[in-house]
Amino acid sequence: MTPSDAKRIISQNMPLYLWFQMGRIAFESQMVIAMRMAGMMGIVEQSPGEPYRMVAEKQAAASEAFHGVVRAASRGQGYDRMMAAALRPYSRRTNANSRRLTRAKAR
Image 1 (cartoon, rainbow, N blue to C red):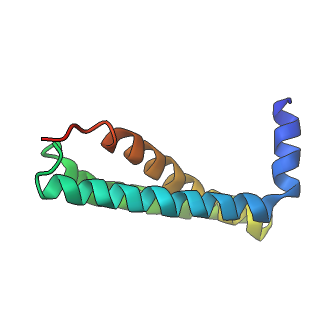
Image 2: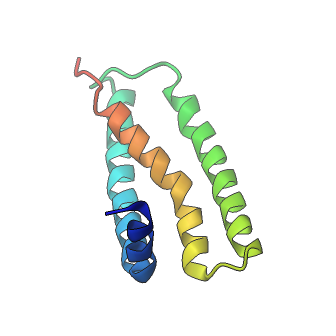
Image 3: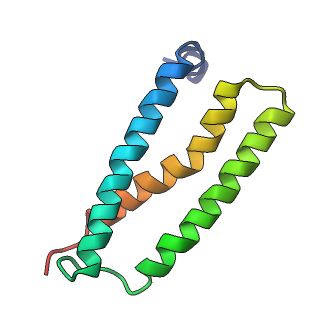
């Protein structure tokens, strides 16, 4: 499958793709919350900068999502593309956080 084939398939099934992305973000964010709470309780090791990271990444993701939506809207793209642009930063962060936090070691 070539990249253009993948883009065509995603564009034809955009509502399903967006639903899948939102479900994955919801699942991963709950896992991240649980791991961070376990770190705050001392059950797993947590870096000292984790509380700061929790706040800072949300601000950066919100800014990226806003700019993505504005870019998509200014190009005249549809609501589905704007929604995909809004979800992309959150998707990247929840995925990275879940991978990083699941490597934590129990005390």
